[in-house]
Image 1 (tube, rainbow, N blue to C red):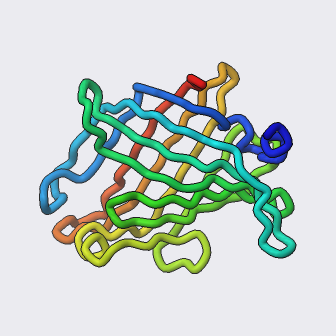
Image 2: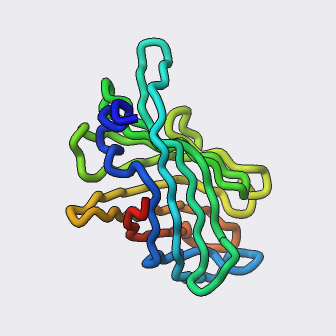
Image 3: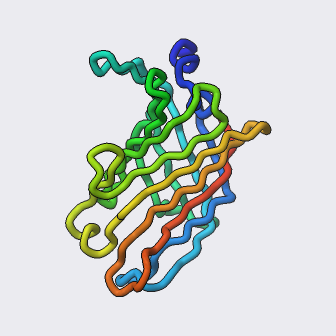
Length: 188
C-alpha cells in the first residue's frame, strides 16, 4: 500500500476518508430549472489507493473513490458519485473519471507536477478526451457543456475543492453555473 501512495504524485495527500460540513451547492431549482437554489451541505469522501494500472506503456496510479453529500440537518443524501482519481506520472496528468447516478459520466483531466499542492481539471462536451456524457433526458433538459474542478491541499491537513458544472437549460438566456465547494478534513 505504501508503494502505491508513494507513486500517487499530487493525489497522495488525498488517500483516506474525509468529511466536511462547510459545503455550498448552487443548483438549478424546479422542474424547468429556471430558479436557483443554494444548499449548505456536509459531505463524506473516501479515497482508496489502487494500482498500478497498465495500459501498454502507460502506467497509472490512482484512488478509487466515492462521495455522498447531505443537506445540513438532513439524513437523506442529495448527491452521490463513484469513480477514480488517476495520476499519470510520465505525462504529468491528473484525471478524474466519475459517474453520477443521474445518468452522467465525466472524464476530466489537467496537468500537474508530482509535488503539486493543487490542480485544475476540465472536461468539455463533445471532446473525445476529457469529455462529458449524459442520458437523453439530461442532454435535452439540463445539458452539461463543461465541467471544471480546482483542488487545493492545505498546510493544515485539510483540502478544499471548487467545481463548476456548466449547464445549458432551455428557457434560460445564459448558461447556468452549477457550483459546489467544500473544505474537508481527514477522519481516517
